[in-house]
Length: 329
Image (cartoon, rainbow, N blue to C red; front, side):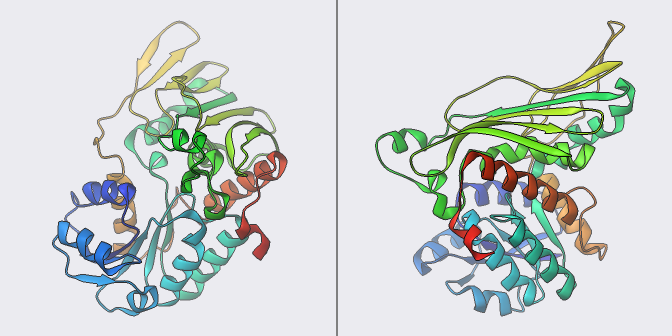
């Protein structure tokens, strides 16, 4: 049994708990919130009695083995390092940090304290991504990767009325690229590694974050095209194009339907059965790694999380998105 503490009491935490509670070895033991009222209210919904309003006290607690961090992005690194320094395993919501400088510090803390650190990026751990990995050789030499994730933010209407919520506030290391563009970049890195060059364009909003953008990534024998947005919608599928065929995936953020279109005209459906609560697979991976005594995931590895963040840093630099966290370097 892995005893979890939660940092963050929002909708993403609720989704994680709904998924993780399906695992026999998951136990929610403690909840942190900045106010005792919110911590108690959230904990009561899940029958939890142990609550904290002080992170250091929680990190020192002998009642938890691991922590799931779903606080605003700008707090991820500092909070994760605090828990790792007290011997706790950390599952940190994506993006794992504000920039590559912070990711390196987190990896160092994980190694020094002999604990597991994993980025909670669900899409690379679901069965329908694994089936892509297993079948990619069937389409021959890959020449192009095309991923689009454009989802009109529920907070954009408020932004247009002059109310800047967290999602559009650079102080919390937010914006379209780090929030949803990462879903296009992470599978690319898992499949093909780090690119040779990054060329980015984006629309910088008045608040200082990007509303949407596109990135071209150069590899030795292929290219990748990525489009992301929090101010428009799109239904374009995710596609990997090879010389002998193409793999078409319905959604880059939660792959549910996967087909191969071969050049000879045949179509093969390689879709795998998958739980509706897609966060189940990240929780399962994390718990199994702890139980096996492993200190990183082979898929959402330290190297992959760092490479993804280095791509994001370069794209932000070209677009002009600056976070207060960048100044700590």
